[in-house]
Length: 290
Image (cartoon, rainbow, N blue to C red; front, side):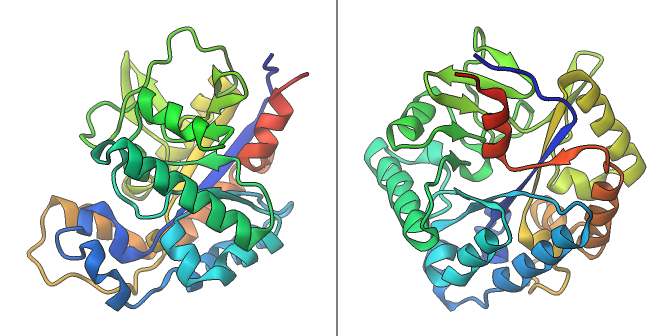
């Protein structure tokens, strides 16, 4: 049975490097990744220092891409040593709903094992690249040994986001019990006049004026008692390489307000000092009763 826990913010970080973003895939297909200059380790350290600088320190969940973990094992160990949760972002950063069942199962199991070997801790959570999840994929995630997923984004106007069946799932706070010993922690969005507005973070956090964004988050917390926020390490890095291409909607989204995100993130967290900033597993542990 789920019990409600009030006034909680779950900060989640999707740990991938700048060249692995879907919006830049035409310029950086996976076969080119090994040749790119990685910046993820520096950006993660910046985030960890920011979270530690706040009193009390923010505890976050880092959904780490297996490819990054293999190249930068110290990233995984550093996150864990600061008291944060290690979860999986898959291994290859392919859209889950574009993979066949065998390939997806291998990706899920490979990333989980790698992260557990590096961290020495059980990996409970998973987030699909670009929230590309559906009911069948959720079943595979559970079968692969995860106890929660955090891939569902209810904003329907984004072509890459997946859909799941939520009717009848017991819910308290923001968690949904999808199956026995398996929960979904969806990205938080705002509902205005019957329409879902993306409010979970990422590019929307960089786009919206901060006071308006904070106001929306307060509305979500008043309704649900909790809020799920996501960000990527490359979003605090205005010095990352730029693609040599004419500006289009995809590159515009990627580079929008990168120079403001780090300071904005600190101000956002400081605006909610009365809330608890805990990991996804801590949140679920606080909800589940025997």
